[in-house]
Length: 290
Image 1 (cartoon, rainbow, N blue to C red):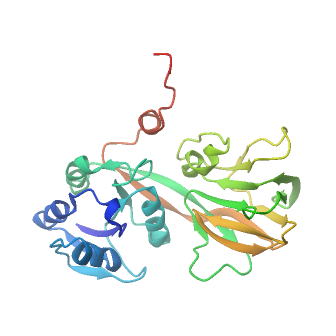
Image 2 (tube, rainbow, N blue to C red):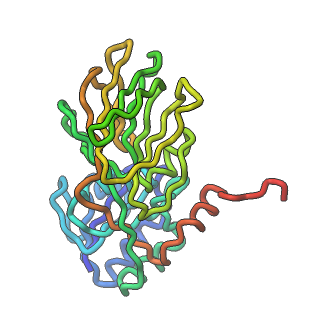
């Protein structure tokens, strides 16, 4: 089996089991391609003896499965590099929460054996696509979690004129607006009051950030809709964040957000139980009285 491996080149994002993990893949006869930056980190910075078949430069790679080693941020960055290739992904968590990268280091050997034996399920995840003039070089137009329109830190609130499918809907007066996929509903959107949406639900959620009205509530739309945004700001600029990667934009730059033309496949070696993940990772439904 061919694996493409990406990771977080930071010493505080390692679990110490990486050498054994690579040894396991080699002992099972797997073909291993490793992101070149991550490979240099493992060999030079950590001093580990890592054997692989090739190094990945850029986004020109192919594999039977992609492994992301790190936290949820690493998983999101890896997903953008997988893009429309259709290669299924699995995340090994060496970070904190591990909602997307949900395989713990202690379970990674069992997970890899399950994957190699074909004992896993796949979850299809929608992505968002942003269309706008002046997308900065190096920023992907695709988001697995969310696209957020935000004020600059020192600015007053912004006005976000929003239309759906060409029909004017509302002008948000707020610190920002989070447009999220079901995957991203448990990320930034949730922290500003958005709903939890189960994976596989074919919707997009709009959640205002600190709105200047009690009547501005989160809105769930069909994923087939195109959302057009026109932003006005006293500073004449605002921030666009695509899965946490931000850049500044001039006001009245027309922004269209829609479902991306492809999906990401997430490998679940132990089956997919979204609600047990909610209970375990976010203490969902926990009764503090007990």
